[in-house]
Length: 155
Image 1 (cartoon, rainbow, N blue to C red):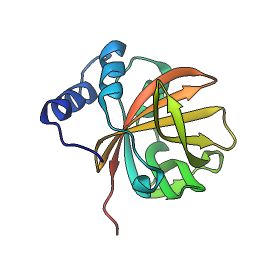
Image 2 (cartoon, helix red, strand yellow; image 1 turned 180 degrees about the horizontal axis):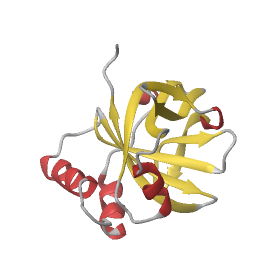
Image 3 (cartoon, helix red, strand yellow; image 1 turned 120 degrees about the vertical axis):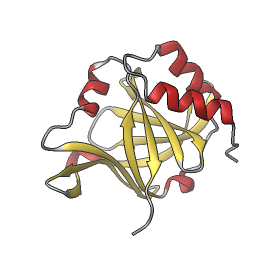
């Protein structure tokens, strides 16, 4: 069950909006304070935003080129569009972004993780609120960056 915590929400928003690189230790502590989430709670469309970590992944996700990262679409635990992109007013799933959701232990807590089918990436999720997630992107066992996901309304 995801709990509401006003101070945690303020810390989440402040780190996401930081003008420069947010301290990695602060992001690690925030992620650790968040609630585990079940795969079924993720089903739907989510808009993404990277935390400003100063690493290359956050830089690439923050850029606003012609084609840019928009978020993720969780259709079912076995069918995920991990790389939803946006270009020319259209939203589409990138072919290499196929993934599945599974419960995975990360830093001592079991929560939902998204495992890419074609890339060596696992995104670990924790819930800040029912409609707000924090993701930790891991490649080959190394944490690369943090990002936020915000549930989009059904159309």
